[in-house]
Image 1 (cartoon, rainbow, N blue to C red):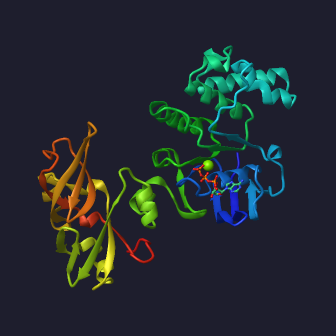
Image 2: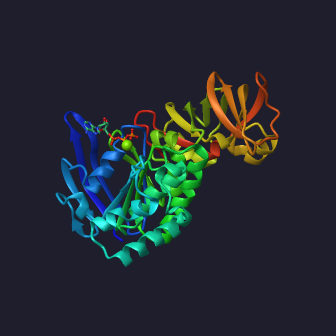
Length: 364
Ligand SMILES: Nc1ncnc2c1ncn2[C@@H]1O[C@H](COP(=O)(O)OP(=O)(O)OP(=O)(O)O)[C@@H](O)[C@H]1O
Ligand SMILES: [Mg+2]
């Protein structure tokens, strides 16, 4: 068990800056998720913590120990990758026991650790099988088991679920969260999947182009994204962005014109006579008259043309054109909207996010 600290870590490959000035303290037993698009530097950061890559500058501490220059095998960490890389000719038991035998642990101790990991991962009945006789999810569990038996201070996981189909991914996601609670250990987990980040992390680190954009618990990232990038990356379907103008007490955007909502009035007034980017989550656009009523003065109304209706059972996604701009609304299955229809919409401006058009940072 240990905390992990990164201080101004930087990594360049020739002219490419993979990680720029990365500072973060991961608490003991915390589950932190690094998330961001392909190439943003997630794996590089993890490999530097693991000791598989050397940083160009900056410091890494595991617990209170500075580990710069200390080889991976002496860092008391375990890394789980996307590929399972199990030994094909060895049974599950022997796959789990392998690294412990290499370390010359006593036989009874090896047996205790293997059985404990198998119990935690619910693979006790599979110990005699060969990897070829396992499903993808079972293989991934064995791969996790191989890191668990080592009883490391820190687990580093790089997209461990991306080889699995959607259903299994969702299942393994909850299993890893449970595992984290049972093992009471520090986990740093890399993914480009915002759902994994939202559901698993105690805190999320959103990265772009090697630079940290925001570090916060999932709900805070969702409710108070620091900038347009984070707002658009976390949340599915993504936030809608509307270019609006503030004139006197009026906000004008694509297809609507409304009094400034009380909740955002101060910040909007500071953009008097100028453009501003207003962000609206899909759940804050509705064709339900009950919402139009409920949101009251905090909402604008607009007419939208329905471009696509996507029923998902418990909810329906409406792809709309409003004032010439495409918008996505998350509405109830009670909707009467159908392709080509014109619908009256409420835009819940009181719940909107406001971004500066030049810096793209959240304001207010
Ligand atoms: N060994 C290397 N040599 C040169 N460039 C590299 C090397 N490893 C990574 N890079 C570059 O560094 C940047 C960050 O790569 P990294 O693998 O950390 O991204 P990532 O966030 O893990 O992406 P993905 O989601 O695709 O796995 C990329 O531009 C990548 O091309
Ligand atoms: Mg990667």
